[in-house]
Image 1: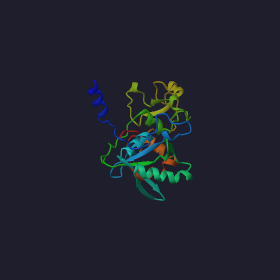
Image 2 (image 1 turned 60 degrees about the horizontal axis):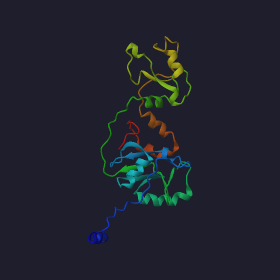
Image 3 (image 1 turned 90 degrees about the horizontal axis):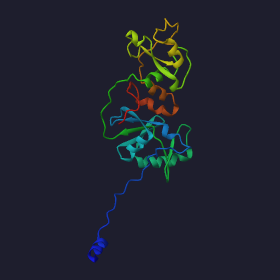
Image 4 (image 1 turned 45 degrees about the vertical axis):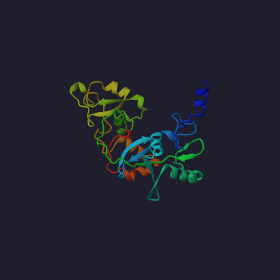
Length: 238
């Protein structure tokens, strides 16, 4: 027993590896912050836009040194590691701009970057725009294409201009955003048969509709330089 106690006394202490201090926003944001709802554009190693991710994902990439911040100011861009971006954030903290988003950690506050660049990933996503409910609603601006009124997402549906019961296809040219009332009124008829008129002919968008909506927000102004000709889906994971 004494031998066991002596061995226990002199046994080396196993220490867990030290983790690099970093900020990963908690799952629930503090009441004063809307920063977690913002998005970050991701570039590949060749400076080509490939994805849009949330703030938590972006900071996770920065903390693991898989990405760097790309910051554009006065027409010029500079790159920053997580540590140098934290230092820049401290300098900018006293001169916060209206379109800035900030994340508060335990001991510091850090500016949410708008663009990050992956340091090892150089592939491109497939340039394919999926025909989805989200993209159709975004294309039509959440406006019923029959009555012309704006509705929240849960009060909208997808209508086939030429009904599926008549072999109408699910294509960009044959689906529109419709409020529940107009969809029920039209039923299995064509707009002409139901004496309803489309406010605009449906068609395939030239750019991802959700992405176009983002670009209308001034805080994503810096994205435009990277998005020429891009039409992939928003929100795909890296």
